[in-house]
Image (cartoon, rainbow, N blue to C red):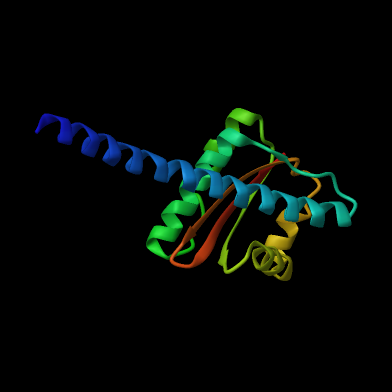
Length: 145
């Protein structure tokens, strides 16, 4: 009887622990693709590309999770505090949800405020968090310089 319990518990542990790893890999792929699209846009306008801040991207990811869970867009209330350790003199944030990351980029470029953030030459660093929730991609882009 004891021998049956061990494989069942082990199987449950493996199943539970593998899900976050899969979600993390997918989120990293989304993050890298969003960075590629943002940098393609910046390069096309003669600007330097953004360098990714990986620790801050964790905060951006958590923000995207919160938006996706609540199915509501809202800005990070403590962004100035989050970028302060990186000697930021200026900062901004773009948020969105859409079916594709390309659509997110298009929406940002069609909005004057979001476009200004994307094309601001002061911004040299970015943090990106992307999740898929309720059939949509939820994106947080935090920029600073």
